[in-house]
Length: 172
Image 1 (cartoon, helix red, strand yellow):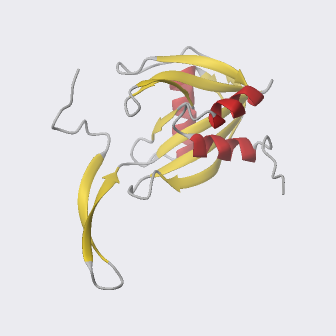
Image 2 (cartoon, rainbow, N blue to C red; image 1 turned 180 degrees about the horizontal axis):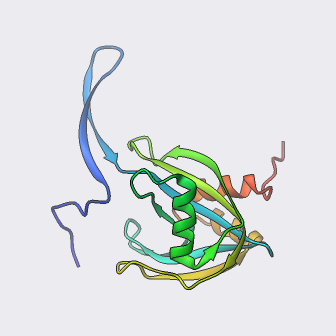
């Protein structure tokens, strides 16, 4: 496979001209896109529901949080419930948005970290044609070590979910 000159359409990069407080101007590349969700899904027996999938940025298979793009004006909680069910076949007893953040300092869209508690498998995953996902359950302690390993992309969302669930405690 190879590089393409045209965008795939999920994200757009635009140049924007800015004026600094001192009057100087500059142009920055800005990544534009809609809202996304990253779900820290925990079962009643404290297993974290993960998705082993190919990630195009790193160019390899990673063990990640389930998640994806909100459809249009879809509420974040609805998008999280839909993505969790579609990608893993799991449903949550409760969903809580625990963090809203910009994807990066060069992006307009927001990533929402969602804590899903009381998750249980209710169906088989319903994957899109371009998705190849294996559902993996991991004990919370092993998941914390996995997050710290740097082998996943949504570490900020993972830490937010773990903290909101009470698995991380300040040591100060």
